[in-house]
Image (tube, rainbow, N blue to C red; front, side, top):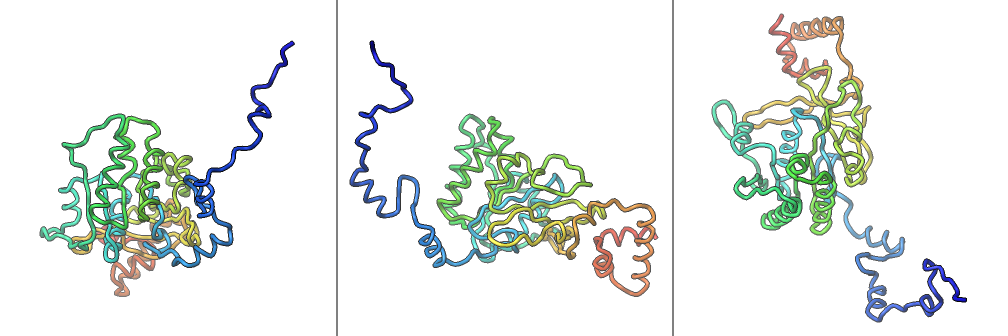
Length: 335
C-alpha cells in the first residue's frame, strides 16, 4: 500500500541539508546587504545616523528637508497660493521645481501681477512646469509616463525640492482607480533615490466647516496618509471669510506645534504683485469653527468703531480682534 504524503510538508530530502548561501551572498552579508535591504545592528544604525546632520526645516516645522509632505484643503481656499509662497521662499536657498497642473501660464501671470501690469519678481531658482497639451496622452501607462517625465525634468534642472500641484489632477487624468496610491509610491521611490524634498498638494472632499480638520479629510486618506512624513491643511474660517487657518496633522522630525490649540491664522493679501498669506497670529481651531451670532456681530462692529475712534489703523484693529483687514474695511464702509 502506497504511503500518502502531505504536499505542504517538505520531505527530508527537500529540507536537509539546508541550502547554503553562495560565496557572493556571504560577501554581501558581510557588507551589510541582502538583496534590496541594508542590514545593520541597532547600535550601528544610531552611530551612522548621528554622523549626519539633523533635519533642517524647509518651512517652519511643517516640512523638513528630504521628507515627503502633504498639503491638503478644500477648493478655493488658497492651497496653490500658499504653496507658491513656500516655493518662492525656499528657492532663495535651493532649486525648486513646481509642477503646476492647476493654472495656465496666463492665469499664473494674472495672479502675480498688480493693477498696473507690473510682474512679481520670483527667485531665479524657482522653476515652474506645466503640461504641454500636444504631448498629453492618457492611457494605461499614464502613471509611468508622468513619473518618468517628473524624474527627467527634475534631473535636468538639478532640483532639490519638488512640488506637485496637485495629486488630484494626476489621478483624475488617469484611467486607474488606484492611481493615487500608485503615483505616490512611485514619487516616494524617486524621493528616496535622489534625496529630494517632496511636497504633494491634494484636495479634500466637501467637508462640514463646523467640524475640526482631521486626517480623514484627505481624499483617499486610508491609503495615502501613512505614506507621508508630514501633513498639514488649510481651513476656511467660519469667523471671517477673509481668514484662513493652518493646522498641522502629522510630523516625524519634530514636535506637533500647530495643532488644534495653536493653529496659524492668516489672511490672503496682495502686496505689490505678490499674492500671499499674511500671518495674523495664532488661535484655537475652535474659534474658527464657531459661527458668529447676531449679538456677537453687533459687539464686533462696536469694537471696530471704538478702535478706529482711537486712531488705530485697519491692520492693527484686525490683529487685536482676530479678523482680517478686509472685514474691518467692509464693516467701516457700512457704518
